[in-house]
Amino acid sequence: MLGLASGPALAVQGSPIASAWGDPDTPTRSATVGLAAGQDYLLEADGFGTAELVNPQGQTEITLQPHMGYPSIVQPFRATWTAVYGLKATYDPVAPPSFVNSPIGSWIYRDCRSDTQTQCRLTPGVNEQRGLIVAMGDRDWYRVTLRKGVRYRFTIATSGGQASLTLRSPSAKLLIRHIAPDGGTAFIDYKAPGSGTYFAAVSLVTQANINYAVSVQHR
Image (cartoon, rainbow, N blue to C red; front, side, top):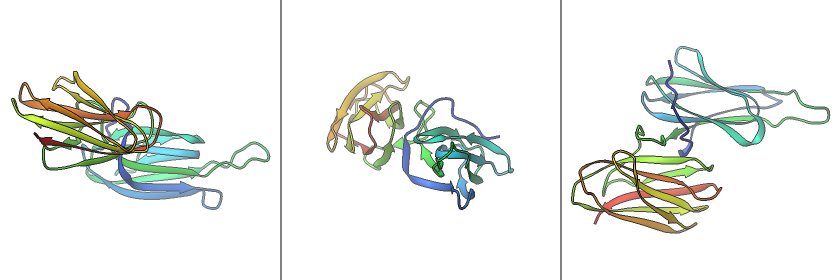
């Protein structure tokens, strides 16, 4: 069966990888998408109706039933199989007299978990990771391997709002927190006291929709 994430991890990575809509003209639409076993994803839906995630065996694993345009309903999950999944959106036309319900929209995004089980990674001097965060409480955690005695600089650049960049120990203890201003950059300079897997995390400071880029370099 499909493995669901144990806690909220709602910060999405990039554009949707699948979407489906339902409206008065076409009440039900479906889409398919290839998911990877062990990867974390986010299912989001808004409007009026039902959004369903269907596993490779044809069984509905997640059902969301939004009843407004904003805020949307979100559900993080982890795929069990590397296979093609289905996304189905069904419009609900039932509304009070003189009202018309908004169409239902549904999306699947790649997601970073907000705990030490995250599979998102930073590699010193190699890759920059980009993401989008759309709600308070959302956060992206990245695994990063540091070596004892080596100095590192973590960098975050953001647009659309302020972002918090934190560094956590291998046991997830908070070590440092810095704030990047809207349209600005923040840094964390750190000398690792021991070798191991540390965690860099990005979150909102105030409600906003932000885009960010985070990286780590040797100093």
